[in-house]
Image 1 (cartoon, rainbow, N blue to C red):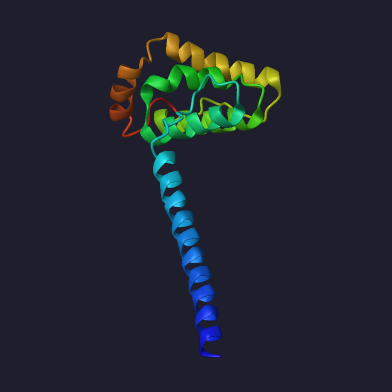
Image 2 (tube, one colour):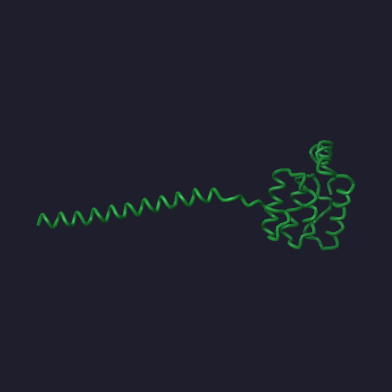
Length: 147
């Protein structure tokens, strides 16, 4: 009888050690996957992307960074076919410049075109990214009249 118990214990201990080895292999593979995934390149949002979500992410990033260099590209996005992209573009412009210049992302196309023309005229008048800082400082953090 004693011999049977030893064999049973041996079988049980081998199975437990085997399961423990599998467990450690599982944990180790998880650590490797997490480590390798953190080494992958960072995908940067792109204002010119074909993907609307990437354009939205880029507008949010530009707004949060106060990226005045992005203003001309954000103005171009006011003509975007995707309403959500237009919405986030005007919010980003408002955050960066302090104004919407009368732009409404949900307005009919002809009204949006008039407001986009105001934005482009403003840029052509010399509202360069460097000039935005001066404008913002003069207006107490707001660049241009509210519209």
